[in-house]
Length: 281
Length: 312
Image (cartoon, rainbow over all chains, first blue to last red; front, top):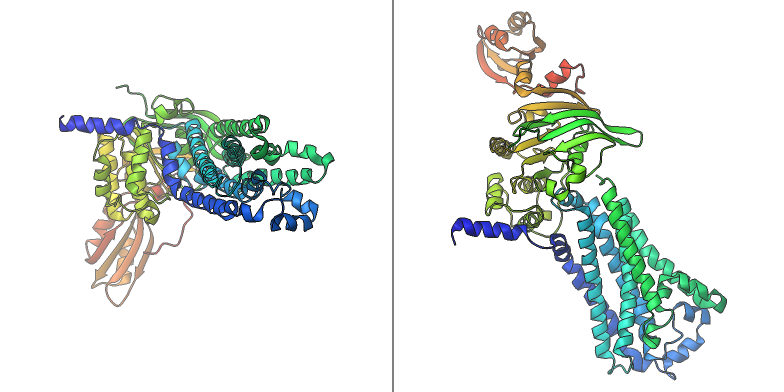
């Protein structure tokens, strides 16, 4: 092969690279992905192995919970703490893990459009040979992949701890719960991305991502207090994910449908919004 | 090859609420030209350029870029345009090389080694992380990014800002080469002097309107020059008497110091009368500034620039 032919091939390879925006998004964020992976791993190892000593019907923990005000117990979702499924759902998926993945999703969803626009990077990217729709979609895929990795990691770690921690979980139910957890994160992430695409402002995007999570949690906690307020949980994304306790009763397709359906809707709005509006300085 | 203009703007306007950023401008930039847009901050230069790249959309009027409407031209059109934003902010841990490779992946083939060659010409280290680069070096990276895929049209917003004079000169050489190569260069500056060596024609913008479009040659003929000269063996009075009669000379200032007698003045247009007048004296020092075309054109159109006290 002559030098000019080699040159031509190299140039052609650069030109035909697939999904350049997605690759860059993943490349730029691997450090934070490693950070969140460590955080999620630490949260799982902090809570889950303690189940045999903390959980169980006659454990110290069960006795302690009996002494707590029932409203507080219901707010924290600690009613089912005595079963393995209830314990993992209450401590990890519903509490610390929820906080972690929502923060990660909101941060990544904010950075995808609003953060990049405020820092001036988006202007330069969009001046190149890429459409706005492609930028939003590739960055959304990058967001989904990172969050899905955290869900897969949690699934695998908890599955590995299933026997040693005497959790008695089935892989299918664990997968259903990890899927609900992922859906909850996607909702916050796509909300942040959508509001970023609508406004170009980091502050609003972050408020949207965090707001969705807080709204869902608070509504669910209120709905948990009394039977006649239970319907509130139907309006709460947190309720969509966990009100039917997928770790104990199995997959809740309705809840998953709402979580993923709204995420897709938010993403569609983000595409349309960014395609239509002027870029901010 | 068609002879259609590279850029054609017809009554192009951009309004933000009640403020008008761009007010029905008409402009034609021929293919292969180096066209400058001059004006103070907020005059509409950046707005015009962002409209060409479809980063913002016009309120009314039309733009045609390389024969296409930027609104519908999409990525295919933008692959033929190299753009340098006016307020270039580059962040991130990646190296300059990785960032440029990323843009090359998006915008299509670049000549192998072309990236490095441009970086070498501007004296830019591509292996340093972007966020550690100084403002000037980020600007160089932005210039390489705009030039590297040899686009048919270069849209460069304040390209010389932050560059030291030697790099500025190299940049202007690159602009001339691009033009010789058939590429069109559309660039802006808030001072004409920074781009007048490269530009063929300039449009002067003020408050969203084009005040004038002139060839640089024509501007040069009516240019305003600031001169400074030092004379020995004479007096301030003698100099004043001899220079006072020159009609196109103004702001004459003669100072008797410890050393030579210092003269500063402003000359509009022809400099010959001044040179003849001072030839009778012993000239110890003489400096004629590169003509400030901007000042002359604004004077010409009755819109004198906000004058800052001039320190010579």
